[in-house]
Each structure stands twice: as C-alpha cells, then as structure tokens.
Length: 467
Image 1 (cartoon, rainbow, N blue to C red):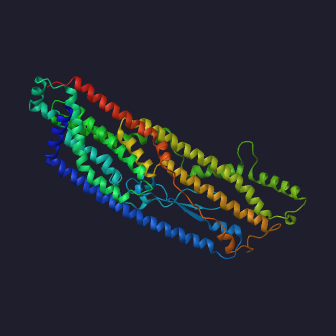
Image 2 (cartoon, rainbow, N blue to C red):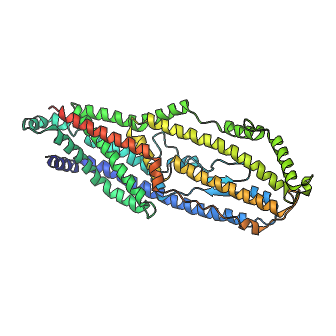
Image 3 (cartoon, one colour):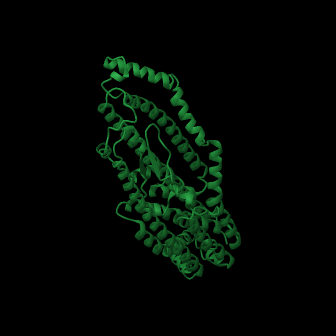
C-alpha cells in the first residue's frame, strides 16, 4: 500500500511543471555557482602556491645579516582549502587565509576573502551550499504543501477513508513520493557537483555529506507532509510552511548569534592584545615583571658559566636572552589564545543549543566540518602554524647562541643563505574524516533528533488523520 501511494505521488510530482521549472532552475544555478566557486578555488590555490614559493625564495636568499633580523623578516603560513570548500567555504570566507610568523608574538590570520566579496543583501552567503541548504527546502515546501490538503479539498481523502485506507501508509507514501520526486531532479546536479569537486582525498567526506543532505531534505519533506496533514487548506499549509522556512533559515540563526554575542562576547582586538602585553611586561600572578625576570636570568646565566660580564660568556648572550624572553612570551600567548579559542567554542556550543529548534544550523555545521572550513579545522591549522613559528624562531636563536660569544651587535652580519635554507618549510596536512566527525558530532545528533521528531510527528498525525 505504501509503495502504491509512493508511486502515485511521484508520478503526480513528475507531471507537475513546478518541479521541472523551479527544480531545474535551482539545480542549474547550483551547478553554475559550484563550477565558478571551484574555478576560483583552483586559481586561489595556484596563487597561494606561487606566493608560498616566492616567500620561501625571499627567505632563502636574504643574504648575510644578523640572524635575529632575518627572523624578523618572517615567514607566511597559508591555510590550504580542500575541493569541498568550493561547496561550503564556512568560516574561511570571513577568517584570514595567511599567518605571518615572526619572533616574539603570535599573530592573527590575515587576508579574509569576504573583505573583497560582493554584499549578499542579508540573504545569506552567495555560496553553492546556500542553494542546497536553504533554497531546496523552499522548493520542497512549494511542491509538497498541498500533498494532503489537495486530497482533502477534492474529497479524495474522504473516499480513501471510506474505503478503509489507513492514515499511516498514506502519509508515509506521500513523504516517500515527495522525496523521490525531489531526488530525481537533484540527482543530475549532485552528480555534476561530485564530478567537479570530489577527488580521492575527500570521497569519504563527500559521501557523508551526501548522507547528511539526504537526511536534512528528508526532514523538510516530512515536515511539509505533516503540516499539510494538519491544515485544512493548501493556502493555510503554504503560509505555515513559509513561516517555518523563514524562521528556520533566517530568524533562528541570526537571533541565536545575537544572543550568544550578548551572553558571551569575544574580546575586542585592543583588549586582547593589551592583556597579552600587560601579562608579558608585568608577569602572571606570582611572577615578577619583565625587567626583574631578565635580571634574574642574567645572574643565573653568568653564574652557570662562571663569568661576571655578559661580554665574557662563551655563548651568545643576546640569543640566550631572546630564548628566555620568548619562552615566557610564548606561554602568555598560549594562555590568551587558549582563552580566545575556548570562548569561541563556548559560543559554538551555546549557539548549537539555541538554534537546535531549526535543522538548518545543524546542517550548516555538518557541511562546514566535512568541507574542512569550520572552527575546529581553523584551530588545527593555526595551532600547527604556531608550533612551526616556535620551532623556527627557537632554532634561529639556538644557532645564534652557539655561533657567537658574548654580546654581539644587531648590526653585525654573520649568517648567510645557508642558515636560512636550512630551515625546513611548514608542511601542514589537514586532519582526516574522523576529526571532522568528532567536530560535527553534536550537529549530526541534532539532525538525527529532527528526523526522529519529524517522522514521529508524521506517524502520530496519521492516527488522527480525518477527511
């Protein structure tokens, strides 16, 4: 019985001009946007690679200079973007793509793509994922709002009821038929999208993303049939569903973000850097200030080597001082950046809780995590770049400490290209699918709950379905 209803509903949808007109228009828009985004990503990755090579060549061929001056020349670390980032750039569209690595301090990322992007008029980011996650559900609403009310308005539901048709196979068949009709239209576009952005490195992530998308659209199909079953007219069902769509896609995410920012705001840039500078200069609770710490270190260093003046040390005095100061500065930066990341994680958790009343934010979280463009992947990259920064500045100062004696002027040039070229480049590998699943675990949970609730509501309505 369910199969018969499903087949009948699918055939009715395939004869509906709205499915082909609106559906194909949306899918054409999706493919064009995805192809454009994929080309832009490929160009950006080529430019990133060229800039990396140029920056490394400049580093390798600085010529003779003081090693600490060379270290201040700095290196850049660029976050690579996976092919799936063409579908959903996530927070990468608003966060910097490059980190400048220099001695003494950890920097924030630079060069956010959104700075140069066209405005979106507040309708959401103009990215391919927006088509799938926001506009396709609207198509589901437009196609399915009359799935049950149409039967009620034409008295077909009364005849089915008189013939003993149970409500459960009717509503489940309507849901499956709506889903099947939608799948027929989406399949070619999704296949084209897979051809554009799926490769051997992300095939598992792409498969999981497809499964999540099927679940997400299944939720919308179930909600659409559920509302249609509870309303008396198609017009009333459409109004209710449009209101639900607007609330789920636009109101809930923005309202949740505003509440989160009010409850647990991020520090301003000025306050963040001022706190780091204060703790370095004044010291953490229980520590002395920077001058006293350096004075005590100098005394220990002289005692260790049995001399009375820094000029008589058998190692580079300034290099050893830099190692000491930078170790403390690294500790301070790690403390404050950890607090910053923890604040963002708290915000993310709070936002998930506040927006769980809509499946849209959860699907956004899954999409960004599997594309490698969420907060967890951003932190993994920046932490890896910071570890490399600490390594390269420490290696430079350790070499300097061994290569010099006593106090050497910063104007003295005694290191050359051999030293710069000996520094290994940063080789960052993005984490795998297990990392993405862990990051998006709560979002998968929200989607599962929504699917269970939507299907449960559908089955409950089937018991109360009346002509």
